[in-house]
Image 1 (tube, rainbow, N blue to C red):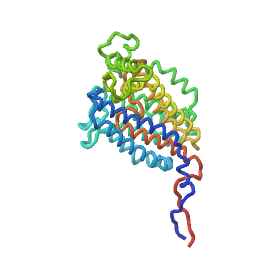
Image 2 (cartoon, helix red, strand yellow):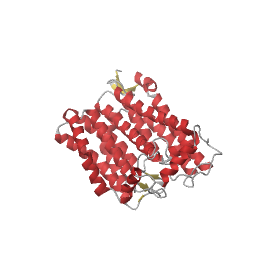
Image 3 (cartoon, rainbow, N blue to C red):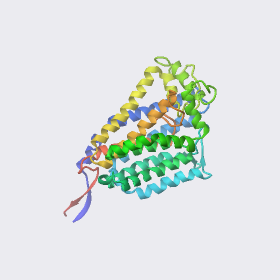
Image 4 (spheres, helix red, strand yellow):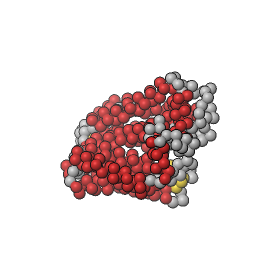
Length: 386
């Protein structure tokens, strides 16, 4: 008797089981991102953009798409079990931001990037992926004891580590994303409504503490100007005012991708890329982008319902939390209904690490969706008698 690798019929079905609609939606967005970034460069709309931006975005799209397919073919349970290998690596990369290798981008408040010489990466994007897997794995181990105070405390402590680290970096936007992931994943796993109610009751006290002891003057003032618009039009409001001006100048159908009179908005290739979308494609184009982003979120939510167990469901809802929070905060920031917090628009904003991270996150969702039958796996070992 010997063990040989046999072709599982499921392997042939794998390509039919992939959520092609979700994959198509994110590819459309990232493809549009490459086009937008190239236009910002060729039309010389922003001096912050060079030829490397759209090229890096294109390479990240290709690598991300390939990585997404590979990850989706692997059972997410297997990926989660090896947390002890990649979790220390991710934390180590984040720790490097506090060394001489760490730096902050021009115009950013945080020190969240590391320069390895041949490449610059944002470790917090990798940390999001690691947190998705480790937290879903942790929750799956204590699902039936989730609402016991000790286990809930340990789960909250688990979440506080990455959120606290990125907050110390000054990256409050990503810290909020980690908090959203925690809430969505715990709620999906069956967190008692009374805990949620208690948490909501404590929010004013938490906000007071953050406002008093965490935020600096610039962060407080960014909130103040939203409540009193026009009080710092040439300062903290300047970027948002230019973003709104760009969107308004797009009219109904936009100025197109060439030959227009474009508004140069700081970080237009990154956090404020939606302003250029509105200027180039108008109100109609902006609405189409919002609808596609909403469709991606709904598709991830739908896939979470199809997952077979708590780990798969919480994994998908963690990705939903990332997408929803990024979309809400970025669009709110550009439309001047939320403070500038420096958070990118998924699949659109420039950034190779963010693009790869988002594609791999989608790969985890598709893994949970495709491996939703107990007997399903792409490969299996069969025993052949000889």
